[in-house]
Structure formats: structure tokens, C-alpha cells
Image 1 (cartoon, rainbow, N blue to C red):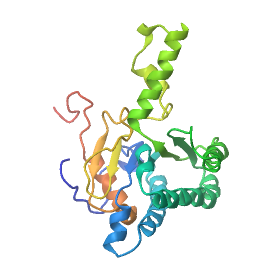
Image 2 (image 1 turned 180 degrees about the vertical axis):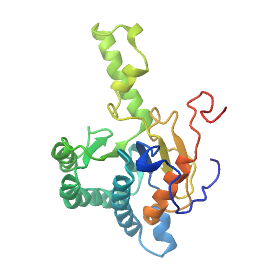
Image 3 (image 1 turned 90 degrees about the vertical axis):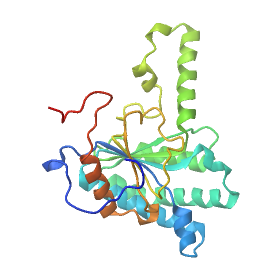
Image 4 (image 1 turned 120 degrees about the vertical axis):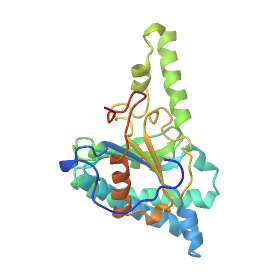
Length: 255
């Protein structure tokens, strides 16, 4: 859909019992700063409200029967932001993990982190490891947190790892295919997103899941991320259910 999506809360167009609901929804959470500026508040307050929106989205995803929810929490390029803002974002990440991890675990939610771990401070790295290790055996919704993540960087790392195997003589170049590349991505074992939602009205992917979104549906909505709620999420899923996904082939609705 081009332009800003016009969404309204209504009954889902998906079939009963969750059939047709996307397995994997990925969200580019945009607009925290503009949300705050519009209200004369500091940017930190926008980011804090954004964390509350993540909590709502996790609950909604579980209620809707979505199996994987990926949130773009901090990109590899976000380190270029002012030092104070980066510090505030790291503080919010720590608070989210410390305060919410027990509840996520109790609700059978598995946490996975994608993104570059090398170079992170020890306290952040330990928190990310703790979140994954504690919830590793959970079988409900998988919450994928893209942290220090960049789609191009992820592909470069995968290519480098594959090249090392070729150089070591353990991999025949003729054996390299899409499936092999996917095995070397951060998201290995996670299905590609069915739907990517970006808030705030911006219409770009910002280096997010570059490989994985080749056939994803995209939805760009005008709401700033702190305003994203259950009604907005349900309206987005309703729009997805009305789409005709063809994956490069003919429409299943033709005929």
C-alpha cells in the first residue's frame, strides 16, 4: 500500500481461530522524539512511553495468536545520536529487561536478541544473555529484539562466515544457496516476517531485516510509536488479512 495507511479498529478479516493471522510481525518503532516534541516534553519521555507501547504490543501479539514479534529497538546507526540520548536509551533497555523479564518468562514468552554483540559494554551484554538464557525453553510468543542491529551488517557477517568455511576447505562454493545464507543470519530458525509495520508516517525500511523482508507485506501508518495500542495493532492485522500475497506468482484469488 502506498501512502499512509488509513486504519480503523474493526473485526479481523482473517478466518476464525486465528487462521490467516500473520505468523511473524516486525515493527519499526518510529516517532518517539516527535511524539514528545509535539507535547513539549523531553525526548526521553517519548522513549519512555515507547517502552510502554512495546509492552502493549507484546500483549496484543499474544492475544492475536502471532507467534513471532520483532521490534527494532536500536539500530547500528543509532550510536551516532547525541551521547545523552544514547545513554537514556541504554538505561531504558536495562530497565525493561530488569523489570519485564520475569513477567515475560511467566507468560511463556521467549526472548531472542539479534544484532552485533561484540563491542557492547559488559552490563548490556550480560542483560541480553540473561534474557535469552532464562526464556530459552519457553514455547509461547517469541519476542525478537533487534539491538545494535543493521540488515546490511548482518548480511556482511553471514558472507564472511561462509567465506571462512570456503577458505578452510569445509564448504564447496557450489553448495552456497539461499538456505545456507539464512543459516548464517542472526534470524536463523525464525520465519521471515509476514508483515512489517512502520509507525510515524515515514516510508523506508532503515536497514531493517534487509534479507528477510524480500516478500513481506509493508504497512506505513501515521501514528507515532507511543500511541500504538491494541486497536491500532488489530487494525493493522485486519489490513494484512485483506492483502493478496503472491510471492512473485499469480494471485490465489484469481479464477
